[in-house]
Image (cartoon, rainbow, N blue to C red):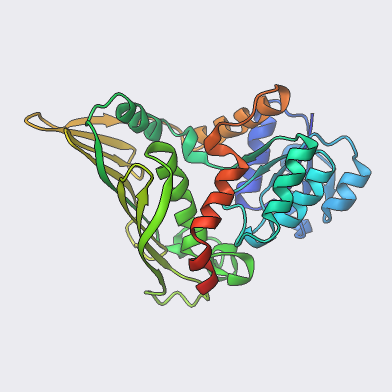
Length: 325
């Protein structure tokens, strides 16, 4: 099996190293930053390094799958090209910065019968899976409402780099708190609770002084098909990292603090129960790549929460908001 990694930045490098750990021996790298690609190539022991994905596919025609790990704004064009070559795809979230040409990609995928999987690493996190299991078992009864709080100071993401030149901080690359953070929380909420059908209120804009040209804060009030109300808060400004999912039910409350890997179960007239989630930070990424490899090797399609349609649905719900930014 030969897999092309398009984009050798932080997430592309992580996926590439995990694929090697999982036994993928032939990994092809492609990045406009030749130095970065060469450094990763040394770690992988590969000399198949390119700065143009079209040349890579031409010179190595038997590539089985590709990982799209480049800035959000540039996802669709290479995905369409590779899908036409019948190459299976893994696309990091979000699918794109708007809906342009997503229908074309969808039609090609269907016509060529290739498998396409959206990145959703929290789908493979033990803590979120525990929360989902408790909800399915009606542990807190009917769900009434939920809150998703996610914030981390952008300069701390990659301390050795100038945060202002990274894609998350740049409009020309499809950055911003909405596309970078809210997309993650949106996928998690739809998977654990229910499909989001409506935005009742929003505030997306700039609250800090990070010297960036994208939104640093995104507040939303969502409603799901079954009537669950969700408030979602994502920002680049929180000096103390926070990442929490709080779900209120008729019988009690579930809280998952992803930052400290701790689940709190609160039921009426009972003492709070604490469940520690013991996991290596790379484990969920490793599981994600293992899942993708199995998709390629079998006739199975990805879980509905990992399908291309989920990536399109997020952009459809956010269409008007994205147009205003």
